[in-house]
Structures are given as C-alpha cells and as structure tokens.
Length: 464
Ligand SMILES: Cc1ncc(COP(=O)(O)O)c(C=O)c1O
Image 1 (cartoon, rainbow, N blue to C red):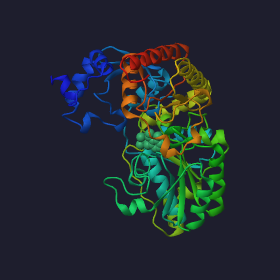
Image 2: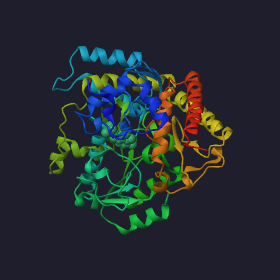
Image 3: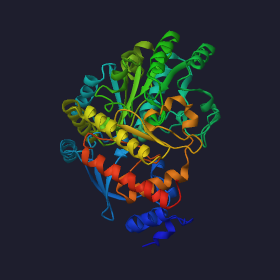
C-alpha cells in the first residue's frame, strides 16, 4: 500500500489537518493510490480537498460512513441528487428490480413512459421531454434546441451561474468573468455567449436591446451555484418578461431546484413558465440521468416527422444510456415518493431551522460570518474585509455576484476539515443541501460539530 502521506506533497503544520489525518488513515491510503490513477486523485472537481477527501463506503438517509468507520451527517447530498436521502428503501427496491431484469435493451421500454408521466405531472410546462445521462447533457441539448428553433446563435448567461461543463458553460462561472474562453474551449464558442450580471435589470435590457441574434437566456432560478450568489425573484420574473418581449427563449436550469424547492420546482414556486427546462439529480432518484423538457414546438427539433414536414434536418440525439431502465425506475419512484410525502416541504423546514441554529452560534460566539440560503439549501458567507455584524440580517443579494465568490480558501478548508473531524460533511464552500431525512438529531449534531469546529479554529489561531 502506498505511503498515505504521499497523498499530499505540501504537508501543513495545521493542528486541524493533523487531527483530520489521524482520524482518517484509511482514506489517506486510498487517496495516495488514487493519485496514481486520477488527476489530483479525484473524479469530480468538487471532491478536491487538501490533504485529501474522505472515502465513503455506505450511506443511509442523512448519514454516511467512511472506510475508517467514521459517521458523518451528510450535506453533500449526492451533489443535490438525494432529496430522499441515501438508499431510500422504495427507490432502492425499484432500481434493484429494474437492474435484475436488464439494464440496456437497445429498445424502447415501458419504464421510460412512466418516468415521462411523472415529470409531466409535476411540471406542467413540460409538454415533451428528452432524457439524457446528466445535467450537462440536458443544458447542452437545451441550447441546441433553442438555436435550432430560433435560427439564432447567441445565448445569454449570468455570471457565477453554473450549468454543467460543456463548452458553452465553463467561463464566467468561477473565472473568466470577462467572457474569455476557459482552458480547452474555442474562443469562437465563448464569443457566442453573452455574459450578464444577475439582478441588473437595466444591464439586461440594454444587452437584449443591443443584439438581434439571441436564441436563448439560461439561468439558475435561485442564483448562481445553487443560490450561493443570490438571485432576486423579481429579476427572474423580469427576465421572463424581457425574453418574451424579444422573442428569446428562456431556459430554466432546474438541475438542482427541480423537485427540490417544491415538487414542481422553482417554476412552480416563482410562477414562471419557461420555454425549456433542464433537469437532472433528483429527477433520476440518485442514479445518473437528466432531461430537457418544455414546449412541444421546440422539442419538435428532435422529432423525425416534424423535421420531415419542415423539410429540414432534425437535431441528432443518440446517447447509449438515455432513459436507461434503472434510472427510469429510480427516478419515477423518487418523484412519486417526494410528491406523496411532502418531502420538499420537510427538507425546506429543516433547512430553515439549520440556518437559524448555525447563525445563533455565530452570533453567540461573535464570529462575523453568516449562514444564508433558502429552501433546503444553506451557504456560508466569510470575507475578512466584509465582517457580518448580524448574521440574521445578512442580505446576500446586496453584493455583486462576482464579489460573493471571493471566499478565503484556506480558512474554509480548515473549517471543512474540522467539520469532518467532528462528523459533518459540508460542500467545498462549507454549505450544503438537506434531504427530507435530515431531522432534529442531525441539526443538533451539526450545531455541536460547528461549535467545536469554531473552537478548533480558535485554538489553531485561524479566527479571533
Ligand atoms: C444548476 C446545475 N446545472 C447543471 C449541472 C450539471 O449537471 P451534471 O453534474 O449532472 O452534469 C449542475 C451540476 O451540479 C448544476 O448544479
């Protein structure tokens, strides 16, 4: 077995990191080997953590266990896929049954019909749907449908908003806010994206008025990176009005918000009817899967007969695992369960209590940060030159989105390691997503872990 310490070349003398290493020798050993297989030893950028991330063996409901036997309250939530928690019994049964009867028929199958019905029942703007294998594929297809339908090339996107990793979506999320292309992306692709500032209605009106070649605008309905940079709902409604006025299609990226904020997603909460929506994550019940859905006349771009009638080539869309039976079974079951059991409301209510309890700790300990967010989502604001006097009064939409992204990476890293040592797994920005299975026990454990983590940061001299 490789030397676990070789997982990280630059060993720090942080006592928190030392405690983390002591706590997780099995993860350290696996991380050392992983570095010989994967760039940075990881398979998703969000799993990048120095000295290494924990290796998880199993999960149940709101908790998961690593290879060293440590238990965590989980706020990573399968990158947002697990509104029903880990290994939900009904979803697991449905997926297992589908698995046992064959995973890939190279043919249509009944489960895909049930999945489409489940989506259409919950989201009325979906007249037609096309399943994909991920959210990235869903937003990619949404852009292609919009360009095909309108015959126009440009797409409006909002700075800090994340829509996956295909070429049109990479710059302007965490860097390249000036519109230049990200590494490996053609300048010509980036040039067809018009970056706009969220919450700036005048700027948006000017932009839309200055171009007559815009096919679509795409947006995360609660703000960039799952609401880390908050979006004013009035701006979202104005975007719907302005795009309609200009004949521009509105693509709502509901990859995170869909089936989470409410069974009908953000569009049901804010009363918005998009032309197209992108879905993934909860859609597939913890299995891989995505979908683009919306107006029939736009989805007709994928339809053989419609293309023949219009005498133009259709959009090609193969995809070996589109609507695969296992994802279809898991997704259909998850959508039914969440709609029948009030899962979204339950997660939202627990989210509100968690944010309040964590802010009470900050206030009590005079730590000038704030937890914020909405629904079943929470984020942490920490900026040394912008101390928060009262976390309960913090307004994330008061700061420009690009400035919100400016967090102290080393402090956040130390906090994240401390929280892991204390049994809580947060996301890389020390926020997270709740499931309907999180409850009072998880909140109490999280508050205790956070209180102890602040004490560890104090002892390490990381905070005053
Ligand atoms: C809002 C949003 N859109 C799209 C995506 C991409 O989805 P996937 O990771 O399934 O490709 C994500 C992923 O986190 C997302 O948060």
